Image (cartoon, rainbow, N blue to C red; front, side, top):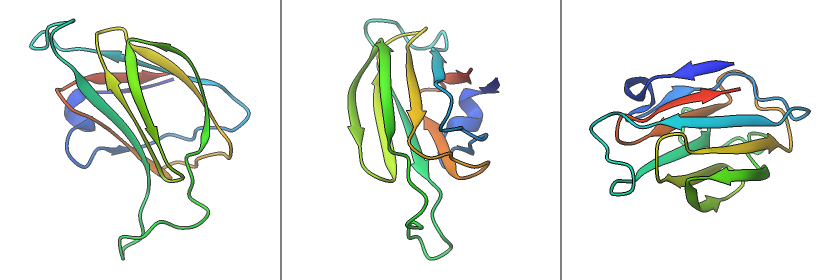
Length: 119
């Protein structure tokens, strides 16, 4: 289980832990007190790591299966990135990648100082 602060997830984000393709990973978000549940939204993105030239490695994909979505909407996906709108504290979803994402194989980002726990 890994925890990420809203500060670490802001801007360029932070590298992922290993996300195994044989495991379903639960992503759970916590709103800071500055965001009002029901009135404010935040955004979450997981993006494959780019090369120094700014391109994606053909093997660095984040495709997978999403389930058990709670307080998250508007999933947008491609081979290299996925994003959700987070609508409240305690928002969560399950994600099982099609291929294992190695340590630093992708970056995690949120807006609004929202924190994340992956279990």
